[in-house]
Image (cartoon, rainbow, N blue to C red; front, side, top):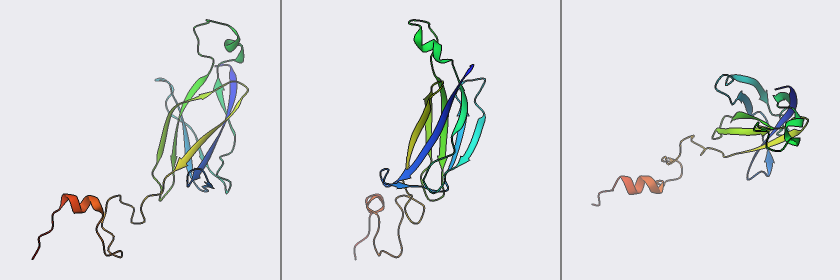
Length: 138
């Protein structure tokens, strides 16, 4: 790769309505011989990571029909933040000379941190528990 593309990850929650500060975004290579972590970034109060430069094939490859080479690079991205389900994205494209903004909408975990669990303060049992563990009637 002799070109350079740029990447910004926009991390949100609530169906992209709210920016999510403090998420850790890790960018990995997407090739067998190039799959290690390249960058680890934190989102700011606007939910955006800093813009980073990454290698990409030269733009000229996209101008030659049938050249047999991809005119873009691909990267893998993981997004983590305490209290939210992690996100893994594979094969995110990046083009020479272009700033790509990759959205990542995170889903909060239940307050107790475990899905389908009993909440002792609600006085009720989650439906999946009710179905899997029958109650005896007196």
